[in-house]
Image (cartoon, rainbow, N blue to C red; front, side):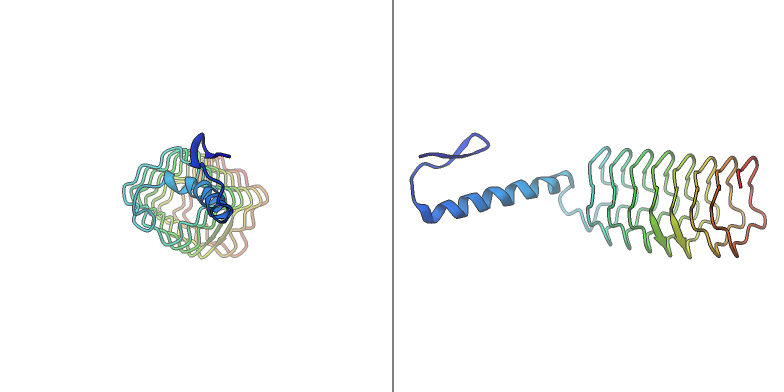
Length: 196
C-alpha cells in the first residue's frame, strides 16, 4: 500500500501507527497554504508589502503595520483590521465588505473604487483618505475622523453617520439616501449634486 500527498509518496509501508500522523500532517499543510500569500514576517510587519490581488478573506490582520502596502484589488472580505495601520496604502478596487476597521489608521490611504459595504468603523482615522466612488452602503461609523477626506461619488446608502464631524468633507455627487445624519456637523462640507 502506498499513500500519496499531492502525487508524492509519503508512506510506502503499512505501519498503522504512522498513518494518523501522515493524514494529520496533510490536513495541516492544506490549512497553511492560505498563509503563504503573505510575505515572511507579515503580520505584524507588512510595511510596503505587495499584496496586490491577494485573497485575504476572513484574515486576522489586527494590529498589523500595512502602511504603504499595495493591496490594490485585494479581497479583504470580513478581514479583521482592528488597530492596523494602513496609512498611505493602496486599496484601490479592494474588497472590504464586512471588514472590521475599528481603531484603524487609514490616513492618506487610497480607497478609490473599493467595496466597503457593511464595514464597521469605530475610532477609525480616515483623514486625507481618498474614498472616491467607494461603496459604503450600510457602513457603521462611530467617532470616525474624516477631515480632509475625499468622498466624491461615494455610496453611503443606509449608513449610520450619527454625531459625525463632517466639516470640510468633500462629498460631491455622493449618495447619502437613507443615511442617518442625526447630530452630524455638516458646516463647510462640499456636497455639490449630492443625493440627500
